[in-house]
Image (tube, rainbow, N blue to C red; front, side, top):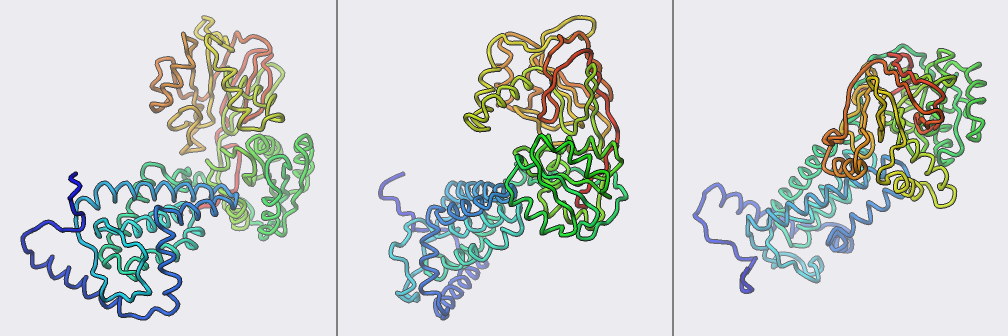
Length: 496
């Protein structure tokens, strides 16, 4: 680009009657807006417009939303920033370069409204309006409540660009449309949590517990903040909510099941697993409130927080879901998400060993480094009459989509299938799997095999081989039988 190139000069084009009429109307609207008296706007809108330079206002808003510490708010903040980035990329690479429209003449705009530093880029479309609409739309797609709070600020930023005289109204309208489109483009690439929720079937008949009457909830103190329990009590004032230590969860669930019309649990996947086992034995419907570090079952079910669970309990909305069951010698159990042997149980052990010293996530990273060592095959099993080294054997309760470094999402929790994935022992298996996972689905790895079955038997396992299920770890003391219990568990969940 030549240093003498003037971005504010429009190229000479042929006359077009409709285009000229639209431009004339746009200019008249700009002059009319300049002549309007907006009470109190002189102090607010110019400052608001400047605060949105380079997305500073929206990054600050994202930080404030994420600070609310709810999973949906954090996702809304991330989606808003991602949408803003997509919009900025589109505006700066295509929008500003394709239409070289000069900025409006500032003569009709009062001096008190004008910005101290006027922009020098072309006028069409408005980057500020695009960023504002992209952020607000992205937030609203993930969390309508937060979107409603952000929308007035986004509208004010867009309006400030006309108010301060740096854009024509059409610049702002087209910029806002592009920004909203960028947010929907991000949603097409990364679906929102409600989009990825499984269908609400098969539906089950359960009691409608107004205010939570008849519901007894056991909350694991170690799973999450006490704010979640307080919010649950506010949402279900008639429910009995008990807090207990992790080692007491099983006993408290058994006591609660003896007097409850419905059993509730607040915690992570391990706590939900314990509650599901008790609910199955007593034939009770289960209400799950996500409250742990990992809440795969609740999120795959479509339960976002205590409000969603409370609404389903009060309205009597529920579905039946499959449960996986395993027997390993004298050890039996159920799993709602996954069961695995091999490298993952080893990772869980390493993580538990170090989490109290360095924290959960650092311990997980350290555990991964420990188990992803060259030539390490923690599992040997007999398959087809031959003993084979395996890096990982994964069994999902339902078919998982897009398996990578971690399991993806399930689109059906009552499909009647076990999703079995095997990673064969090979030279540098960890390196090959990591490369495949980085490039896309794990199924691209030549060391990987997958099959969907209803029943699985493993023989020839070394006694003491670790087995992980829903984040808990036990040891194998014989052959392992894994089977499916179709539609065995009734769970409250909000229906469309």
